[in-house]
Image (cartoon, rainbow, N blue to C red; front, side):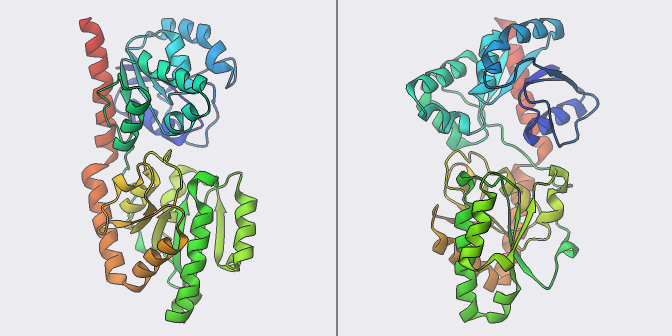
Length: 368
């Protein structure tokens, strides 16, 4: 296939999809208003930068995109994100056209105003096929646009040879609770810090030796960083918190393998798929996640992790304490978590799912 991917190259997920399709022998073109990336892009991929930046570029780049697509002549156009690039994809009028929805684009963007909702609805209806990364987000798409009945589920996957356990990476002097997230309010890092505080307070009474060994490792950066560091000071846990900052995706396994437990306590349903959760599970980590968006879909409750109510630090802390104090359960959850990922979210399998959707779109267009 000759695939044109319309998406932000600044996203690691765009790079991963593009690299995977290129490695499978497809001719891949990325068309973007966000050309900068920290990730390694295959030299088999051709990148086309649009002249005008977002957000205005989602509209005024349309003539340039139409000209570019006539030149490339792809078999299929795959736009990612239903709001911005979905608008540009609709305005390109290119067929066959697959639109991949990510999260904010159908949860938060349509709620801004009736105009925003109408824009997203029109973008969804313009696509030949609309894809979702999770079942819960497919339901959200249907709530916005009931005319769309069939929505293929195309989950993000994990390369389990790359995301794999390396027990020797752990420092035996610490018991580490960690997360890999952008430091934004939607991801609930403040809830995690409060849960960590509760965990330490309880363990100081139940198991003072373990309490002294506890540490929190936060991988990522973002606009809330200063606020969150101030909160850790206020809670009196700053000396136990390690702020790693943003790391390239290739370095994420290195940090995951320093964790004993992975936590994702997001507060927003726009957390539509728990890719960070399945990366952690692939590294044999038990997970504690909030009951929002697609996070519970990637966890088998009580087997690969524990699902807790959102914005409830005590409940999250109680789950953390349960795993800290029951090491057999902790190890068994980690083992089952990796098996779950291998069976359901192996990267090559997920790439084939989206690839089959693209092929079916091409085939359906040719029959018309």
